[in-house]
Image (cartoon, rainbow over all chains, first blue to last red; front, side, top):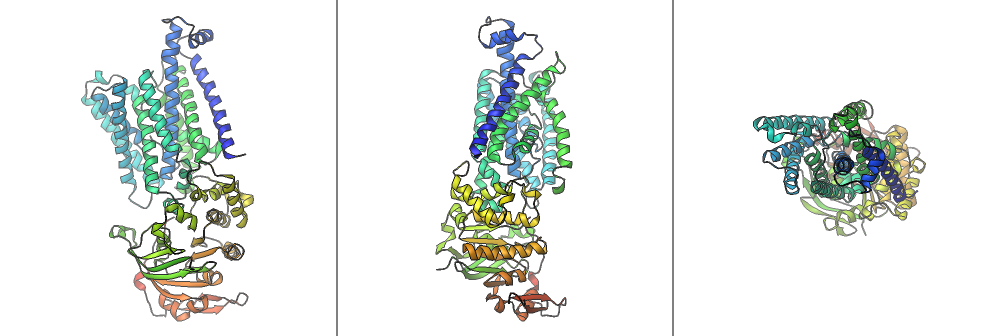
Length: 338
Length: 284
């Protein structure tokens, strides 16, 4: 089978699953709507101010879109950071980069930025700056020896993560709590409905980040051979690393700005896909975009139905899945390399 | 017409690199490689062997002097041009991700058309031929981590051959290999050279491998050429004793008629180049 055919098949199958998951998420929720009511709302036949129209089109649908976008962005960022650091356990939250972006967002919020379209641009810029600072710090701490070993990189990520979490707490404590009303919920990763304009911006930024990564998917494979081999195969290594880094940081920053620092998606999804599809990043990167969407959508649907009518933050679900998964990977698959 | 030429090449690692324990330089290095030759570069640790490969592939730039490929200075070649001419088999590295043998071989096609997302049918047939030449075609779908050391080495050589290089460079190809695989690796290099006319630059501290496989040897000591010539001329007891700082005996292999270097397990030779004998950890 030609690789292109394989890619099309994989993406087709994953998209099918995504559509099914989205349909399920549309019908489930604490507002008890009959399936026919949901269908009529989606078809545009429901009355303008009816409950089913508001719940379906203004609450559930934007939430589904946010979950799919955030999940896809995080999974692609995970694949990118793993290739970049040659470290299968790297991921935005493990590397402390989500925490850096979150700190940026909290700073932005302290200036009163919200999720109207113009303010969302500023908020994302703060998140991006935070992500860059955190990633720079991780790199400086970890790059003491030769290359980036798994231990030092993880350790540096944890340290930077703790530092920025503390910094976030400081900012929150200094500020009038009312201005940061939703911040606690947001810090756990909260897929509350995003206004359409901000959702559009989120989609554009994610597409940009994804584009930067996927157009270099072939080079990501070569990266696994090491820095020197990368040069010897004709790749301008420094420019490649910068491009991938900016793409992955942009993906992380936009997710954090719009839905919060959701952990472990970038670890779980790429690994499951690697087991199913192998290591070729040309397959993995596009598959992670769709697969990440599926995973976060399922996690969010679970989060809002498991304790209905209350709801959990989706980050709680991903962390409950991700922490044991991380330990499993650490103890089995990569033991030899530690 | 020479294939590759080092002309008075000198190089010193910058001072900032000193903490990496490599305060080392190549000085005034000159030698040539003719098409179809197998040239071996031998010498003690930190005599400049790996630096030489890095200079040839422009991972490093020489401080002075020039390296030419088919008459063209390498600094005038783009990275992809260079990668289509020179392929390097590095010391045993294993990617962190479970790529298959086939995927690895295809990576060698990158410099031939970096703009493609997937390789062309021709790319795939070249990679297949490369795997066939090194005897790993039937392992194409196996993850590298499941292979033996020897098989993995042949897979990496297949990747290099898939680059269709004019010059194949091997950096310590038998390090970490069991004896049987060392013999196999030597046979493979000779076969590639004979059947495909592949020009080979073999960098190794294994004197007997070099003696067995190479047409000519370049003996480096402290970044300088100590001797160049056929294996019989370079593998001289007095010369080796001076360069390596210990006594050796050079015999002849009865079947292959090639020199064999044996240790006497005594250090009673004059200790030359002792300043260069600091242990250097190479990149893994």
